[in-house]
Length: 404
Image (tube, rainbow, N blue to C red; front, side, top):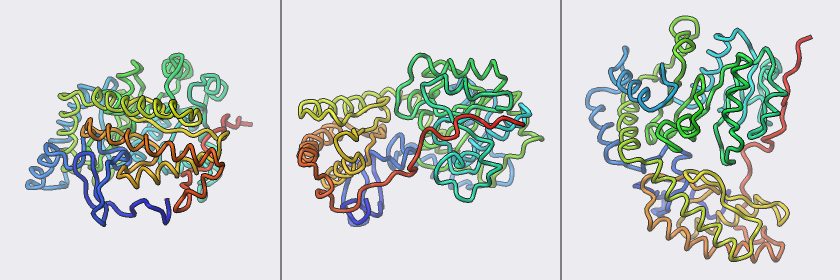
C-alpha cells in the first residue's frame, strides 16, 4: 500500500525472513515474487555461486555448466528432449511462441494466464498502450477449466496454445489432458508456462504432477533460487529450429553464476523432496486460515489453491475486496508478516513461522470482521488500498477474427 505501514525497501533476507531498510524483520510470503524456493541466503546455492565467481561470470563460448544443467533438466522434466537458456520468463515464452509459429507455419496464439510483458501477450490486457493493432489481432484468450472456450476459439491458423497449468484455481475434469488432445487434433503446439509450477508443485513441474506432456515448456523463478535464469524445454524436432531458422539469443543466457545456482537449487529440490515440504507447510496455513475464518462466521473470505502457493479471496458481496485485502495486509505487516494475499512457500518456512502466522491471523481476522460488520473497512486503512496490476483479466478477445 502507498503511504501506509508497508516497508518501501527490503535490504536483506535470511531463510524465510526479510529485513527492511529500518531493520524491521518480517516472515516473508512473497519470496521475491516467486524465485526464492529454498530460502534467502541458502548456503549450498550461495557457495556454488561463490565457487563459480572465482572462475568467471560470463564467457564468449559455451560453458560446461550449460550442458550439465541441460542434462539435469532432462532427467526430471518429461518433455525436455532439448533445452535452451535465457534470463527471464518472458524471454522463453516469447521464444516458445516464435518457434511454434515457425514450426507450424501459422500465426495466431491462444493464451490462458499471464505470460510476461512482450507485445504478443500484453495486447490482450488493458495495459496494451503502445501495441500495434496488427499484433493485437494475433493473440486471443480462452478460459481455464472451460474446454468449450478453447474448442470454440481454436482454428486452422492457431500456431500454439500457451497456458499456465494452474494459477490458483484447481484443475477439474482432466482439463489439461483435454487441452492437449484438442491441440493434437488441430495440429497446434501446446506450451506450458511453468513459471510458478516448475520445481514447486513437483520437481518436474506440472507436466510431472498432472501427467500431461506439452510440446514446449517454459521455466524461470524457482529454478535458481533468486538468480536470473530461464529455460525452454521441448520436443527435439521443434527445438532444432533454434539452430538456424529461429533466432533466439541473449548475451547473458549462459551466464555461469546463475547456472551454478540452478545446479545446486535443483539438487536440493530433488534430493530433499522440497515440493512435498512446500505442500505440507502450505496446507497448514491454508487449513488454519479457513478454520479461523469459519469459526468467526466469515464466509466471505477463504484461502484456496494448491498448497505450495495459495491465495486469500474476499467476496465482493460483503464489501470492496481490495479494501478487505488491504486491511488484512496492513494488520499482518504490523505483526511482522510480509503479506500480499498469497502464501508463496519456501523450504525455510518453519513450523514456528506457520504457528506465528496463524496466531497473527487469529488477531487480524476479527479486525476485518468488525470492519465489515460496520460496513466501514476503508476507515481502518492507514494508506490507500492496493490496486490490481490489470483492471481486467478475463473475457477478452476470446475468438480469433476470421480471415476474409
